[in-house]
Length: 274
Image 1 (cartoon, rainbow, N blue to C red):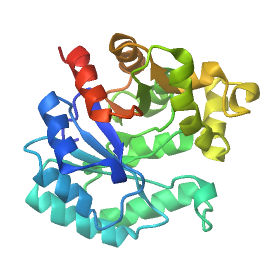
Image 2: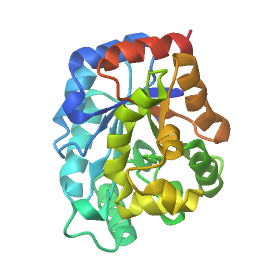
Image 3: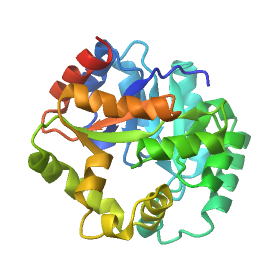
Image 4: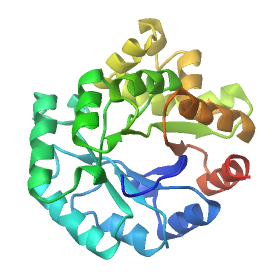
């Protein structure tokens, strides 16, 4: 991979990213800015973030293959990398079937889309693939720079590393709340987690990871919510994030759920990079 992401990045939904936050993330020492929430194929927000910063790489997490034509995305990639060489990684994926009426044969869609990006002159080492299960992880290892799993734990990172092998990038996302009261932390994290538990791909992945149906029902057990949304002091959260690295991940995109995310990122940076 040409872009160097470091061990920890800032992961935010596209609607929550501003030039000011991007510049602050860079100054705090984070290694990458992840733009989540299926950004449009014109990738104008990527350019906005790159223009507001000096050196930090920007990664999409992810451009949805069903919504954005590969040719459009490839043209955007060529435009951005011409202006900001070595600072953009294109994250792509099929998302989840509940959000896309046309969703069928996801593995075939991934292969076809990567073929089209290849014809559009997007280098494989500038692409990461949203991947949870063994089939998608294998494609990520063979066709791209690596995998970007979402809504996982360090146990999944260990499983994913075994499938990917030693070379490819493994860069999971993980949600955090800087809150030492478990009930308040779960009050913030549970509604976010619950949105994904009825979606087949996330549910199947958590079951494959070893969670029980009982953990996934009724908006998630306390044990599941605590695993998917780290909480506690900054030191507690940092330890949970580093567990991904110990399990085989290269990088973790941190999605802060606090009401004041910048303050939380500042606090975490003091522990992670201090």
